[in-house]
Length: 265
Length: 356
Image (cartoon, rainbow over all chains, first blue to last red; front, side):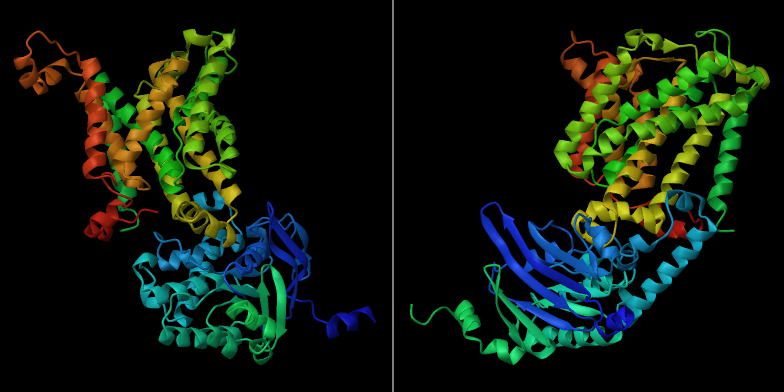
């Protein structure tokens, strides 16, 4: 009986229950709830300073929440260090690109699999059998990933020498290298022109289909969001003001007020 | 073939050096200089692991050398000396026991590095530099106040161990161990840093937040990295103690740490071959500037103008070397190699060797 119930109701990849975060007197996030089911592509929008990135930082374990609960794949992440949260199956990108700029592109991808290496210092020193097998596999996977992302010709380049759009792409590839179930994209289209943004929409849709991954993204480009996301959540001043389909959100009066201001003023 | 060229060259070089020393082709002074170069290579490459590869700024590296020196000295005197009563072990076992003693000294130094690595979870940069200086002072003061190892008077008796080795076979034993441990140090560091596991250290240096979120256990990697660096410095300290035959806490003060720092910055941060090259240059320079004749010649234009000034080599040396550092920082702030290895600077070399 219990088993059938589990099968009919899959565990959400990410569940956030009444999350509140206060920085001193400022309530950055207030009573935030979300449930992401496997395979969803959800958006999170809101004006500047609404608390979107704070929610991502909380979800990835970078901040410990003041109140509330975060469950990744059914397991609570309270008191976990960010690398442990990542090991549970979450990966993210950053609003301002944070690649390791003095390591080759290939190494960027390889090091992101650090928690899955499965060998330690003494294996590395003695170049043991396990070390060689794992290293070979990690390199192979990294090369395959670069190949599908069409980045293979940059494998030995340093990321800082790549064009901006390629760096964005590389950061997403790096996030995917740890085989996440959930991918958090923090403004992937920031700083891209409209042609690049179109490519990015294609890329995200393709990732969503190919890698069997749940995506949750923050974005300011409304057209990107409208085209990609099935569900959108709008927050302002840390509170959820609207949620639903793209069409519903676009015409929601609270969203209009938050973005354009109150017409009575 | 390419895989082994470097190993073969190193073995030939080491055997040649040992033969030359054994048949008195190079005198004791040159031997001491070569051994100092070896120890300085160990110090600079191990400090480079923390200051270069991990990008933390620590300036108390001599503290770990001190711990290694004292632990291995005390053990060696216990086992083969007469300060603490009869020797524990038969003199013939010294050849096997001696490297173990050095490694134990290194291991204790590695554990003591927790004094710096645990604060490094939360602090960075200047604050960590202050902590590392504090640890350096703490360890020196602690040893100064331990009477059974001689306190401020220093500790001796390690020569018995060296003589015991000479009794087994009359050869340049200390040179042999220095060469072995220097190669061991460079080998360990190279293998550590070129593995994906060790590249986590570089990731921490370049973006610690990204490293933590991209699944690198930063705290653990920091501990491991500090332990490797401190452990190798501890081995260097043990060798130093047995070459000189006498240790004093004040020989591991902030000046010694600064020497290691100078070598790292001279060679180029994060470059292993740079650290080796700069250790060689730095040691040779120290020795050359020790000569009064050379100092007199270098300063002859100045002394010609001020005939009553008589510079002494011991003082001028410590004007020249910081001056060199200023010049290097001004005109080539990335150091001799500048974050690149020998193979990157001379790509043709890569055809002839592989260093893994």
